Image 1 (cartoon, helix red, strand yellow):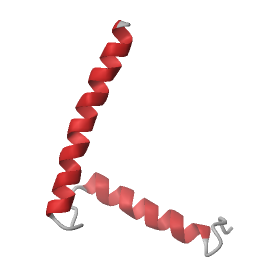
Image 2: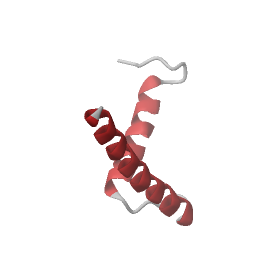
Image 3: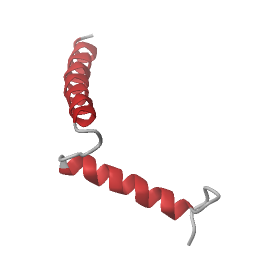
Image 4: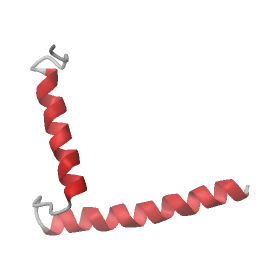
Length: 59
């Protein structure tokens, strides 16, 4: 039970941080200055282009 409570506390802290990031992103209207978030967005764009027009990864 102690482990579960610790994990719940960790998740609550992560939720708080992510909530702040979301608010900051909305305040900047998509202009993200965080390198971590920017790299995640770039990775999403790369993955989408690699799938091609039919959702299948191209060689």
